[in-house]
Length: 194
Image (cartoon, rainbow, N blue to C red; front, side, top):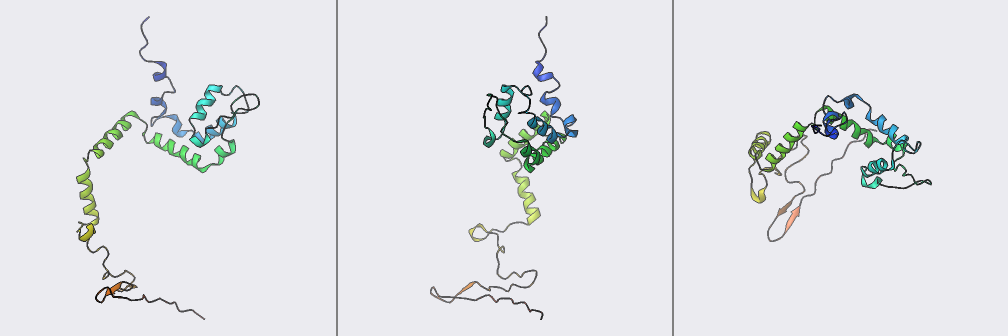
């Protein structure tokens, strides 16, 4: 008998390459309802999940919810209530984001490889010159003055678009040896209608 070409694990209908691609039926299914059904049936029927499957599911939860508490018969209880899974906005948002990511192809092998390659290229500095050029084009060429601050970025002479600011108001003016005068800003008062 010839050896198997590939293991069942890598060729079955529930493999990640078949489930996590942009043409997957998961994109059109209600994953949140599936989770609610899965968690609501956890404690009701003893044959829904084996104890090993329950432990595997519990271990995949965030650390705060990894509570393995047995019931009076010694079976593991679900650490999440059905109401929590049904109503939690973070679970709803995460399942929708997961479906969108699958639809956009973010879990496909080619996209993952391209993302890894792009991360390495960014880490190596391949795009630094391009990013610098884009920043200068968008924000103008920076003129660094004293203390590596762009000149004109904090000028007191600049006027506000609404015309309410005047020059150095509120800034100290040096008079000589360690003496200075601080102008008090004028308080704007509104006229009340009577």
